[in-house]
Length: 176
Image 1 (tube, rainbow, N blue to C red):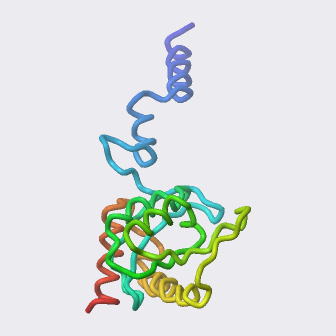
Image 2: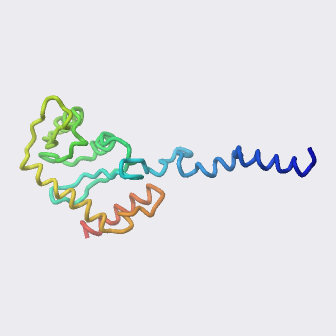
Image 3: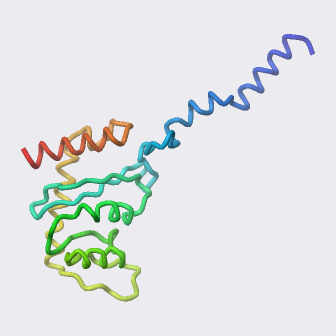
């Protein structure tokens, strides 16, 4: 093997097996490095997505926000926001928050849950259907947040910056 062929062979093997630096450079965006959160973008049916969990007041104004990756269960967001719940008589939530442990935790705090059970439950759960219809205020809040282009399209790669953008939009829209 002459020097030219050996050089070509070395280049081919270099491109087949990436070096450590090259591998780290391409995986920086996907992996969690040095205890960070990652990007909090997860794969869902609709593509890459991020979930925003929110606690609102009776008028539909956000009080606390929490963000997870798209494929993460709603129970994670419920557990994270459980301690930040304000005093309330009742709490509205969609079927994603219909866990028995969450209902019990709400009742311990003195809050009556108004959350319909999942369709796969064997025993149906009673909830106030009239009261549940006022949940549209929460959906309207999410729609108004998405009126801000930067929130709707998520230009920010960093989850902390994106959550700050959402908090700024919520402050301007609902509190100023």
